[in-house]
Image (tube, rainbow, N blue to C red; front, side, top):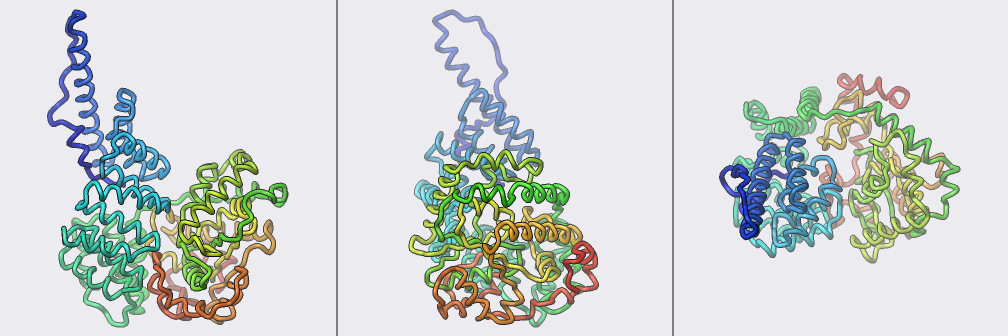
Amino acid sequence: MTNRLPPAWSKHIKPGPAPKAKIPLVNPRQSSVISRAQTLSRAQADDALLKQAYQLQQENRLDEAQDLCLQVLERTPNHPLALYILGTLYQRYDDEMALRYFARAVGEEPENAYYHLSLGEAYVKVSEYSSAIKHMQYALELQPGLIDVLCGLARAYTMFDKPDMALPLYEKALKIDRDHPKVRTGLASALSSLGRMEEAAIHLKEAIKRRIDMPAAYYDLVQTQKFTEEPEELQSILRELGNPRLDSDGAERLHQAAGKVLNDLKRYSEAFDHFKKAKQASGHQFDIDLYRRWINSLIETFTPEFLAARAHYGNSTEMPVFVVGMPRSGTTLTEQICASHPDVHGAGELNKLRRVANAIGLKTSSAGDLQRPIMSVTEDLSRTLAEEHVSYLREWAPAALRVVDKMPHNFELIGLIGLLFPKARIIHCRRDAIDNCVSCFVLSFNKGHSYNTDLHTLGLYYREYDRLMRHWNEVFPGLIFENRYEALVEDQEAQSRRLIEYLGLPWDDACLRFFDRDGSVNTPSRWQVRQPIYKSSVKRWKNYESEIQPLIDALGDLADL
């Protein structure tokens, strides 16, 4: 969510209280004058309500802020600032509604750079990078020196696999304001995605020196290398954790950073203590019972009979490749091997399929009844959705024979993939269950991964993932290629050859040197995938064996001890 105050505010919000309403006696000659006065009075009242809504937003009283904005829209339909504030409120929990409100604000006030910027940022959140870039470029034309726009556009280019176009934007922003919190960390992120870790570290250290967004800077800094000796930053991180003004987000980042360094140094007990404190600081909650009911509904809905009756649905293109599985199961490594082939493009983690699923009602919140939303997908609609998806993939790589979407949690949507793309390739990355879960637990994920907050819930979640994948293998026999992480690190060439054969492409030796690939990487594995394959992550969980009994208990028979 953004709380910034747009320049439009000065246009719409006038200082001082709204005048008290009076009802004078009038004659017909005064009617036009009174009409103008009423309009002015209404505008001032709207301004007062929106000013109050903004204040409520700052106080995190979001429902009250939303109610005030809706009051304004009832009286003044399409008020641009009311629409804009509603967009910022919805950014917390409903990306589609945020997009609609920002788009309406832009439609009402098309020359407002902040409205275009926020619409662009909303498009970034849903992986619609072409639209995001278009709106941010226009915002930059309106205000060429606005740092938020420069950084927003740069981030969109980075996420769209064009970090080389992001670098000059960050450098321009750096010249305008060397201490802006988004500039140095953003520039470091773009450099890291290109594998230029040493340069990224220089900017992050400068940010720390200037005390710019220090928790994020420390967290990003420790991701740029693997430590064999204790760095001076560790004691600095520990001192910052004692800062009484540190908020929960900062504490989470700093505990993660400390844990990462200590893990590198093989001080596992100390590291795990910080990882647990990071989870506590996040405050995330996960409803495993609701999720279990959703998995039940998916299994009950996508039966062999249901799918057989719709075998002719969708688009028969072979271009889409979906790499799925639990996070930290080897999805990034798998994508990089595939994308090293000259006929394959790796697009990273895309939200496109999830947007389609949400639009037709395949949401966790609709766990009780998936029959109605899925029955709404007719043969014509399936083709329309599939063709629109193919056009979206073409934006990434018009000439590629295969485009890889490596959003791990698309494992939940394999039934939808089968409806839209019956000839798509689906690569399921599977890893030792305990290793996979421990690797998840020691990383910082956003609220969408709140199952990762405690070890017991994480183990139960893994069981649901495993149960669903077993179902997909039953209803799509022979369709899904299982890529075992342990098999890949044991014999890279043999497993890589199987992958490329599954994609229906001729072998290319470039796939063995995925770590030399020029493309960008924007996942937590971006340091690891710049290195040759190593075996040190196999049975890594034994380093934490004394700490993870709740996980092992929850995994049950899936835990290979």
